[in-house]
Length: 96
Length: 502
Ligand SMILES: Cc1cc2nc3c(=O)[nH]c(=O)nc-3n(C[C@H](O)[C@H](O)[C@H](O)COP(=O)(O)OP(=O)(O)OC[C@H]3O[C@@H](n4cnc5c(N)ncnc54)[C@H](O)[C@@H]3O)c2cc1C
Ligand code: FES
Image (cartoon, rainbow over all chains, first blue to last red):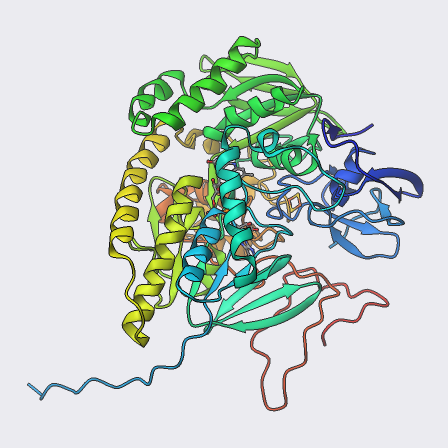
């Protein structure tokens, strides 16, 4: 399932990355947030009550969109662009 | 009486290039005016491209192909003019995109760009930092599918995406109808407009807005469009909860008579007007005052944009919400104030007095429009009263409304920064951007006072978390590290293979 729906700008170059180990596609110019949420329902599970989170403001204000990569790097999903070969996690336990 | 003391002669240091934070309408018009006077300002913006919030441009590459008419609708002409203004001066400014100004003290800004920090001293600084959505929480507001209203617009404008297939629009303010209209135009189903304002309040205040007939007419156009396409518009609504387990499935809401209704939707866009980004002004030492219209503490500025700190100027929505047209005017006016001060202190060409008078006249008109806007879209203060004790008010730290109320009622916290220390509300990654309004309203109620009676949530550097990989150059020999730059918690867990400062 996807949280975000593409309604325009679909003619962009395809970018390939993995989400929880699964190969998926996004488009050049997508943020990590768009790339993940057009392929899934969440960015991570929050440290509170194991609840899913998917960001909130999309403009760098709420800081609720941090995600982890397989190598343990932490990215702010709404402020980072997707790149070929990124290996992103949405089911990683989140502890800050 | 003593003889008069002769004035101390302060040697005037040569001014540095002026620095502008923010490349939105305010920052761009300020830069344009400074370039016209022969200066070469530094223009800093966190975003990759200029334009600010309203005139935000899609990313480079892709390629993204929508024309400006599709991106900005009725504002396309203005967006284009602002973009062109910046393009025209591009070679005459030191433009620093993708650069965050994360601290401001002792005449210097701390910047972060591509993972590296730099200190930029300034003699003259224009803060044009803009605004983000003001929100209040409700049960379910952290579920995937609940986004801010502005964020929902960013998704569309910046990414060509809708936040859902069937979206409910909840809140108040001019953006509510605008974003719903933009979604409908993009082919997205609008589950309804859930406006917190009573219909009559808006209708009456509309008369005041006739001072700006163009803006008023646009609002009517969006409303007519939504109505004609059968979008249900409900007034005087309060949210009960967003339902769903892994993502939003419905919005349950209450009308003025207390009846509850469940509206199915897969996304909720929520916004209650905007709140100014004031952290840098705070760290720069600017004096603040409580602004009843914005229901917020704002840095003081005179009509020209001078703050209480000499050499620091304020323009645009970052120091009081007045919209994009006002931001353009205020940006130019603040640049003229800066030039007036330069001429006074260092000698230089006097500024164009006729232009100053013209800008001052137009800014006065906007102040009246702003009052009408605030009357038309009042902040629903009772929403805060209705927040249940077990509702999470702080998304970063998981603090509940009950926890905050308790420290107020028990007398442990009579002031917001004390409440922050005790509960961690406002201490997390967002630094109170999302929870500050709620925490203030709740504490004020618990103490039986108004939002002006509990003090102001103070900003702390870094105003946004720095990535762990940030390289901070080691201080030169004999020079101390200026401040503790460790962000609240992001650095708590250093990662293998990642070097960062010791
Ligand atoms: C999502 C959104 C949509 C909006 N849409 C409309 C609309 O359609 N119509 C309307 O009239 N108004 C709209 N507004 C209101 C908007 O605030 C103003 O219209 C206008 O953008 C204000 O211009 P500005 O130059 O003051 O600030 P902005 O346009 O917000 O520009 C501020 C700039 O400063 C940068 N910045 C801030 N802090 C820092 C920092 N610490 N370091 C580096 N850079 C920084 C930001 O990245 C941003 O680019 C919208 C606001 C938001 C948040
Ligand atoms: S979604 Fe709010 S900071 Fe990224």
